[in-house]
Image (cartoon, rainbow over all chains, first blue to last red; front, side, top):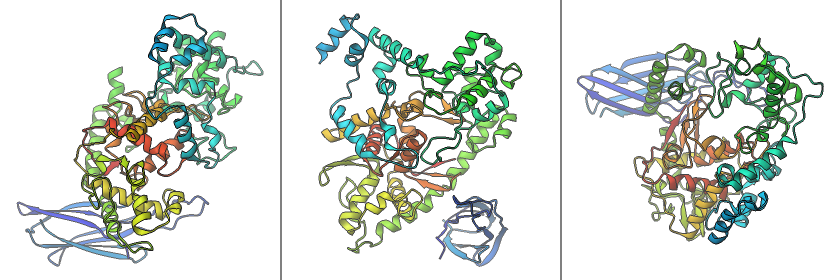
Length: 103
Length: 214
Length: 269
């Protein structure tokens, strides 16, 4: 089971800012370990965000995103107490979903 | 103790080693020689090529570990530093074939490399010179350190007289021969760089064709 | 000339060297400040804080106990503000201890864990990662608080004095001491600024920013790891984890950082 994300969401003047910190190795597939063997690629490929069960953001990622990625984005709408759900899926098929309520 | 310090200050003609000892920093309670050695002994372990033997100091290192003596302005400290410098000067091995300059291109590579002699480096690999870590050298490299002076235009401003060649070689080989407690490693004396590598660094600094002098 | 040099200080390796060369210094500084700002906003150290908190509360070891009754100096179980007052003298161990050292004591006493393997495990191992997560959590509970390290006990004072002496101890094939690089202000190695750690101005720059998440390596480093890597670069043998030499150096830096605000966990390039 992958480690949890940290999500913060704040609404102001009809715009919600969401900040997500994800726990992921994000291996590029180009690095080698100390014995010279290639470390297999392992990175997040898809990120989806939902506001009150409606998809509001979708992203496709690649190997160039850093380890433990931080993602911030703004969405129209949202009010204090609304639920924001973020899901990522990686190239191994692992997935993690976490949620928060807008502050 | 205080009286002794005063006495020594009044006797500037005493032999340098004795003076150096008396002028030493008082490290304060609980940090005397015995306590400090015990701490050192219990605090480290061998790792790779970085073994415990490296904690053992030579006379220069022991002297320079005391800021009062390494930088003090007293006559005693000045005299003691002159002695350290003379000792280090005597260690310098001059180029065996009388040739000062090698290949500046190879020198640039050595100056760029900061590798070598850490616990994560392997024995037998060529060491870098670590030069850019502390010095500006070629204008093109902007990621340079400032612990040491800029060496840009080194040869252009100093020329390449026998005297300059000799000083530069000596400084790279054993920096402590010219400044007892210089921050610069003793690249030749401590076996960090080979004679051929020093020759290449010399070319980087002094060859009129080197980018350092353009 | 001097001014230009100082202006260059703000460059960090976070930018490609080539790109920075073409940029105006002012713009570079602005860019780097923005980069640093952005990093602070999403400091992955938070992930380690959360993990550390979990480890703090999770029953573990033969005694199936959590660390929640661990005394970090302010009484059993008090985490808030504890890091800002470490290292300190502890009566039960008759020793001056830093956060890592004290955690080992609690793991041993409260949880019944043999800490030998934790001490010996290399940095980056699971054992050390857990320790780093724990100190990250503990340090986060002192964020914004002033450093209040006491030198009133003779052993605390001795530790400070030993740390000072260690700071100037020169050795190894490169003749390096801590002071070689950290004994002056305004200097840098390559583009990395170096705080003058033996001063009350420079010491807090280092002390209050660790534990820190290192972006380029994607690793969370506590002060023990930071110091071990300093010694590696000094070409010294490796310090034993939580050894007196490392605690002495921490005592030296923290006491000089008196009243500075903890900014932990930090983030570095």
